[in-house]
Picture 1 (tube, helix red, strand yellow):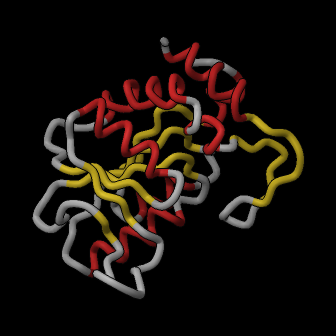
Picture 2 (tube, rainbow, N blue to C red):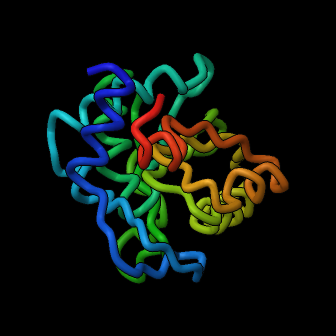
Amino acid sequence: MDRQELAAAIRRVSKLSGRFVLRSGKTSNTYFDKYLFESEPAVLRAIAEHLSALVPKDVELLCGLEMGGIPVVTMLSQVTGLPCAFLRKERKSYGTMKYAEGPPLAGRRIALVEDVVSSGGAILDQAKVLRADGIEVNLAICVIDRQTGGLEALAEDGIVLKALFTMEEVDGGAS
């Protein structure tokens, strides 16, 4: 599936219209339900295949943000052959008490993987936790950049955002 076909597939399976409150607190009349495109095997695989081109060669570990980034990072791991870790929003209060499941992150070049970025808040929150543990965070990869300030907020924090699509591309079908 080429980029234009993939944008159309994402739009077809996941675009909702109505009134939606985003994580940033802003409202939108268009919402892409990431769980709808992430639950379609052919679409998720095509997303991962296209995202793989955005992963720099020096990345050693892909880190998916809970919850929407988990299916994306899992499939991206399969496509790239890179190991992946799963990052919780909050540290477990039992057992291992971890916020990162999977291989150790320390000392590795990581890329954060997210589904849809609006304000960048989820990535910024996770970066703060990782940096407190001495883990360098300077790259995030996402499926859709909603173009609502996330790219700029991440850049201010030293994080480059590489998006497969902008909201305009997915919403309008352009590539």
